Image (tube, rainbow, N blue to C red; front, side, top):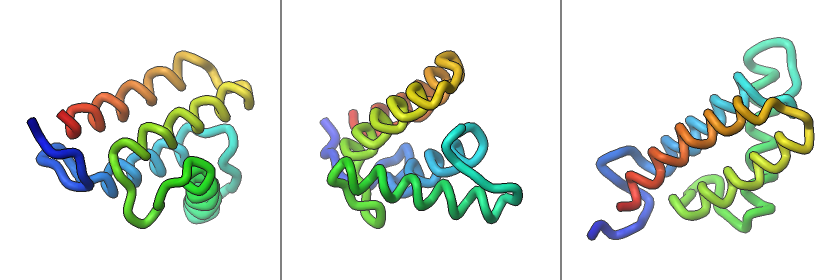
Length: 103
């Protein structure tokens, strides 16, 4: 059994955090901005706030905390009225990668 930490053959926790960030830039109803740079800053601030809410480190995330962060993001997107099919697709895509890294 693999040790659960911040590194895996499937990708680092930081890479998954960055994938979540890119997903927010492209899909989130809560990210604001016209240009990519504006959306990036908005998404990064939003994601940092969610990490703080999950009692997780943005700079050094762990796989387990990433899943906690994703659950909060899903709840926020549902509350904001985002299409549940899009939320489910994105959540499953990223969470399955994270879960594979933890096995």
